[in-house]
Image (cartoon, rainbow, N blue to C red):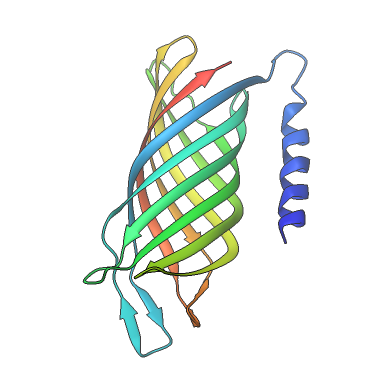
Length: 187
Protein backbone atom coordinates (compact mmCIF):
# COMPACT_ATOMS: atom_id res chain seq x y z
CA UNK A 1 0.00 0.00 0.00
CA UNK A 2 2.82 2.41 0.86
CA UNK A 3 4.45 1.73 -2.53
CA UNK A 4 1.21 2.63 -4.34
CA UNK A 5 0.82 5.87 -2.40
CA UNK A 6 4.48 6.75 -3.03
CA UNK A 7 4.13 6.02 -6.75
CA UNK A 8 0.95 8.11 -6.95
CA UNK A 9 2.61 11.00 -5.12
CA UNK A 10 5.68 10.87 -7.41
CA UNK A 11 3.50 10.82 -10.53
CA UNK A 12 1.43 13.81 -9.31
CA UNK A 13 4.56 15.73 -8.31
CA UNK A 14 6.14 15.12 -11.74
CA UNK A 15 2.93 16.19 -13.51
CA UNK A 16 2.61 19.48 -11.63
CA UNK A 17 6.32 20.33 -11.67
CA UNK A 18 6.31 20.82 -15.43
CA UNK A 19 5.40 24.51 -15.63
CA UNK A 20 3.89 26.27 -18.58
CA UNK A 21 6.60 28.21 -20.46
CA UNK A 22 5.26 31.59 -19.28
CA UNK A 23 5.11 30.62 -15.60
CA UNK A 24 7.83 29.15 -13.41
CA UNK A 25 7.02 26.65 -10.69
CA UNK A 26 8.09 28.04 -7.32
CA UNK A 27 8.98 25.75 -4.40
CA UNK A 28 7.82 26.57 -0.87
CA UNK A 29 7.84 25.29 2.70
CA UNK A 30 4.86 25.61 5.01
CA UNK A 31 4.14 25.03 8.68
CA UNK A 32 0.71 25.00 10.32
CA UNK A 33 -0.66 24.44 13.81
CA UNK A 34 -4.22 24.14 15.00
CA UNK A 35 -7.03 22.39 16.77
CA UNK A 36 -8.44 18.98 15.85
CA UNK A 37 -11.95 17.95 16.85
CA UNK A 38 -12.05 14.18 16.42
CA UNK A 39 -15.61 12.91 15.99
CA UNK A 40 -17.14 10.25 18.24
CA UNK A 41 -16.15 6.68 17.31
CA UNK A 42 -18.40 3.69 17.35
CA UNK A 43 -17.29 0.10 17.87
CA UNK A 44 -19.96 -1.89 16.08
CA UNK A 45 -23.30 -0.92 17.58
CA UNK A 46 -22.27 -1.38 21.22
CA UNK A 47 -19.61 1.07 22.40
CA UNK A 48 -19.11 4.70 21.51
CA UNK A 49 -16.17 6.81 22.51
CA UNK A 50 -15.71 10.57 22.56
CA UNK A 51 -12.50 12.56 22.26
CA UNK A 52 -11.21 15.81 23.71
CA UNK A 53 -10.23 18.63 21.38
CA UNK A 54 -6.64 18.00 20.39
CA UNK A 55 -3.72 19.67 18.71
CA UNK A 56 -2.13 19.17 15.33
CA UNK A 57 1.11 20.20 13.67
CA UNK A 58 1.71 20.01 9.93
CA UNK A 59 4.78 20.65 7.79
CA UNK A 60 4.90 20.53 4.00
CA UNK A 61 7.06 21.05 0.94
CA UNK A 62 5.27 22.16 -2.19
CA UNK A 63 5.44 23.52 -5.71
CA UNK A 64 3.39 26.62 -6.59
CA UNK A 65 2.52 26.61 -10.30
CA UNK A 66 0.19 29.60 -10.51
CA UNK A 67 -3.37 28.72 -9.53
CA UNK A 68 -2.40 25.08 -8.83
CA UNK A 69 -0.18 23.90 -5.97
CA UNK A 70 0.98 20.39 -5.13
CA UNK A 71 2.62 19.44 -1.86
CA UNK A 72 3.94 16.59 0.24
CA UNK A 73 2.78 16.90 3.85
CA UNK A 74 3.66 15.27 7.16
CA UNK A 75 1.32 15.79 10.10
CA UNK A 76 0.96 14.89 13.78
CA UNK A 77 -2.35 14.90 15.68
CA UNK A 78 -3.10 14.11 19.32
CA UNK A 79 -6.47 13.80 21.07
CA UNK A 80 -7.32 12.52 24.54
CA UNK A 81 -10.13 10.02 25.04
CA UNK A 82 -12.87 11.69 27.15
CA UNK A 83 -13.05 10.41 30.75
CA UNK A 84 -10.09 8.08 30.20
CA UNK A 85 -6.29 8.18 30.57
CA UNK A 86 -6.02 6.95 26.95
CA UNK A 87 -5.02 9.14 24.03
CA UNK A 88 -4.97 8.81 20.26
CA UNK A 89 -2.07 10.02 18.11
CA UNK A 90 -1.98 10.06 14.33
CA UNK A 91 1.01 10.56 12.05
CA UNK A 92 -0.08 11.30 8.49
CA UNK A 93 1.80 11.43 5.20
CA UNK A 94 -0.27 13.09 2.50
CA UNK A 95 -0.07 14.33 -1.08
CA UNK A 96 -2.25 17.44 -1.45
CA UNK A 97 -3.49 19.44 -4.41
CA UNK A 98 -4.61 23.06 -4.04
CA UNK A 99 -6.55 25.34 -6.34
CA UNK A 100 -5.93 29.02 -5.54
CA UNK A 101 -8.90 31.22 -6.45
CA UNK A 102 -7.69 34.76 -7.02
CA UNK A 103 -10.21 37.52 -6.32
CA UNK A 104 -9.69 40.77 -8.23
CA UNK A 105 -8.67 43.74 -6.06
CA UNK A 106 -8.65 41.66 -2.88
CA UNK A 107 -5.67 41.03 -0.59
CA UNK A 108 -7.22 37.65 0.34
CA UNK A 109 -6.64 34.62 -1.87
CA UNK A 110 -9.17 31.83 -1.16
CA UNK A 111 -8.25 28.22 -1.94
CA UNK A 112 -9.64 24.70 -1.86
CA UNK A 113 -7.67 21.51 -1.29
CA UNK A 114 -7.90 17.75 -1.51
CA UNK A 115 -5.39 15.12 -0.52
CA UNK A 116 -4.76 11.45 0.02
CA UNK A 117 -2.16 9.32 1.75
CA UNK A 118 -1.63 7.14 4.80
CA UNK A 119 -2.02 7.61 8.56
CA UNK A 120 -0.53 5.66 11.42
CA UNK A 121 -3.06 5.71 14.26
CA UNK A 122 -1.85 4.77 17.75
CA UNK A 123 -3.82 4.38 20.97
CA UNK A 124 -1.83 4.95 24.17
CA UNK A 125 -3.62 3.45 27.19
CA UNK A 126 -1.88 2.99 30.57
CA UNK A 127 1.46 2.15 29.02
CA UNK A 128 -0.04 -0.15 26.37
CA UNK A 129 0.25 0.77 22.70
CA UNK A 130 -2.03 -0.42 19.92
CA UNK A 131 -1.70 0.89 16.38
CA UNK A 132 -2.64 0.49 12.74
CA UNK A 133 -1.66 2.11 9.43
CA UNK A 134 -4.60 2.94 7.14
CA UNK A 135 -5.44 5.02 4.09
CA UNK A 136 -6.36 8.64 4.79
CA UNK A 137 -7.91 11.52 2.86
CA UNK A 138 -8.77 15.15 3.47
CA UNK A 139 -10.61 18.06 1.90
CA UNK A 140 -10.66 21.68 2.92
CA UNK A 141 -10.83 25.36 2.15
CA UNK A 142 -9.19 28.50 3.41
CA UNK A 143 -7.83 31.93 2.60
CA UNK A 144 -4.28 33.24 2.33
CA UNK A 145 -2.90 36.74 2.87
CA UNK A 146 0.51 37.84 1.58
CA UNK A 147 2.60 39.35 4.41
CA UNK A 148 5.69 39.88 2.22
CA UNK A 149 6.72 38.87 -1.31
CA UNK A 150 7.71 35.34 -0.21
CA UNK A 151 5.71 34.96 3.06
CA UNK A 152 2.02 34.08 3.20
CA UNK A 153 -0.27 33.67 6.21
CA UNK A 154 -3.24 31.33 5.82
CA UNK A 155 -6.19 30.12 7.84
CA UNK A 156 -8.00 26.98 6.81
CA UNK A 157 -10.55 24.33 7.65
CA UNK A 158 -9.89 20.66 6.84
CA UNK A 159 -11.91 17.51 7.24
CA UNK A 160 -9.46 14.61 7.75
CA UNK A 161 -10.46 10.94 7.76
CA UNK A 162 -8.29 7.92 8.58
CA UNK A 163 -10.31 4.93 7.40
CA UNK A 164 -11.29 2.66 10.33
CA UNK A 165 -8.04 1.61 12.03
CA UNK A 166 -8.06 -1.49 14.21
CA UNK A 167 -6.99 -0.63 17.76
CA UNK A 168 -6.90 -3.27 20.52
CA UNK A 169 -9.01 -5.59 18.39
CA UNK A 170 -11.75 -3.05 17.55
CA UNK A 171 -12.28 -0.96 14.41
CA UNK A 172 -12.91 2.74 15.03
CA UNK A 173 -14.01 5.62 12.80
CA UNK A 174 -11.48 8.48 12.83
CA UNK A 175 -12.96 11.60 11.18
CA UNK A 176 -11.64 14.96 12.34
CA UNK A 177 -12.64 18.60 11.84
CA UNK A 178 -9.52 20.79 11.94
CA UNK A 179 -8.87 24.54 12.10
CA UNK A 180 -5.32 25.59 11.15
CA UNK A 181 -3.23 28.74 11.10
CA UNK A 182 -0.11 28.54 8.95
CA UNK A 183 2.80 30.29 7.28
CA UNK A 184 4.11 29.55 3.79
CA UNK A 185 7.66 30.57 2.80
CA UNK A 186 8.70 30.76 -0.85
CA UNK A 187 12.17 29.40 -1.59
